[in-house]
Image 1 (tube, helix red, strand yellow):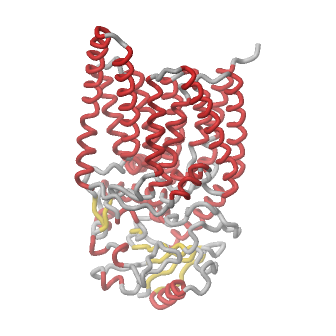
Image 2 (cartoon, rainbow, N blue to C red; image 1 turned 30 degrees about the horizontal axis):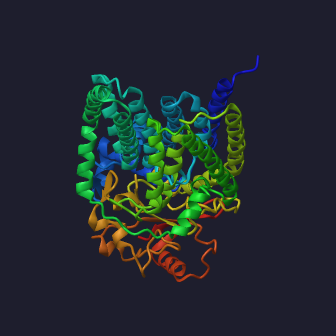
Amino acid sequence: MKPSLALMERMLFFVLLALNLVPLWSVHYFLTGDGPCHLYNAKVLVDFFQGGDAKAFYAPWMYLNTALEPNWFGHATMAGLMSLGFQPYLAEKFLQTFYVLAFGLGLRYIIRQLNPNGLFLSTFGLLLSYHFVFLMGFYNYTCSLAIMLWVTGYWLKYRQNWTTGRILIQALGWLVLYFCHPIGLLISFLIIGSVLVTELGIHWYRENQSERSAYLKSFWKNTLAMLLAALPVLLLFAEYIVRKGLNPSPRSESSHRMWVDFREFSALSIISSSERFWAIGIAVLFLLMAIWAVTSMIKRRTFRRTDALFVVFVLLLLLYFFQPGGVAGAGVLAIRLQLLPYLTLLLWLSTIDFAPKAQKAVLGLTSIIFIAFLIIRMPHYRLASEAAEEIVSAASVIPDHVSVLPLSFDLNGLAPNGKQVSDRIWLFMHASDYIGTERTVVMLGNYEAATHNFPLIWNPERNPFELLGKDGGYFEGQPPIANLLDYPQKSNHATIDYVVTWCLDQQKFGEHPFVLDMKRQLEQGYDWIFTSKSGLVKVFRRKN
């Protein structure tokens, strides 16, 4: 007997879900742009809460942010794992693993509530697990997308059968979602609100007065239960908006650029330009399925409750094209928002019944694209890990209780064998922060502490992001520039004890004045004490 399509799809889903973990666990460091900085801050949080000499050392440099910021989930998770004895790199790897599993299984969970016959699209949706924002290391944002699927799916499952326990679970889910990132919370509310409004409209126009009255009684009862569950997080979110303000800023991307990126689904071309063909293939698959689904909706001449998801897709598509450059302290919105219309479109497509042949075609193409992504990406992941390990080798000559300034002269990265790690993303802006997870040191490249959006904040008198600028440049620029020699005077005698350079001598910027100036300052104020095996990393120690 041939296995059923449902069984084959279920087996394929779990095989691909397992393969989705291979990139994380086949390398020592799964390097992301901001991930090392998040991990470093989590490690500092552990030191803060344990007290002792480590806390006393950090205290003149930074302090805890007591505001109820949404960006606590990833930091608290990694700090908790380190407190239990896990090595820092494993704490980060477990958080990354949580996201990948929660996203894949969450897609399957919410689609099961929408339409069990659409579960094959949860397998297709695994192609969306690794996206540009995840590789940027925005862990809280990506976890918010995964948890949003579970929280919204839970509401879909129990929205007409509330109990006290279920209200509490729903409230807890939204609170967790808030402490990940506001975007996941807003998408959950948008989906739920759209479904409620659509359902109310359908019943209002299709039923007679007595049926309408009975429905409204049940509707308001269930809506009040939901609002009760949402009340704590609504209060938190209101406080956040009042405290931060919206403060929208204009975006830098042109409308044409936004359209090209969306059309090519550039969010899935994450580490190599050779992924572009396959990302476009996924966009084409979405388009073909959407055409079929819209045609089916027109033919049936009815608007169902779940068609509210199509309305959400349209709203998010408009938001993507008319977004500001930043809002409420959050930036880099274009690439963050690009994924959302595709994700909600996927949910709506799952409510449409596709023929078995169409399902088989989608699953076959999913398998091909999935393997192609693995083949393209894995060598780059390995190169990134090898480079990160070489950077961490600098920790062997850096003691505890010192300050360290990392300077990266190649944000795309070079591997020890000289190959470029990525031509798509800046993975090496904060890679040196892994050094701070091996030692009790102040990493002066800690951008989080300069934003007031994360658990730690720089003390103003020592904030390197305010005091190290020079000649219109800054130390995270390309090429970097920093006023090393004047920092003690500006910071009330704080010092930069060690400087770690990445690709300083690789001639990427030639004889750029910033490079020459940095070499002059290092020669004047520091001793060169370490060079990594391939020469890409150098460590300089302050003289005297």
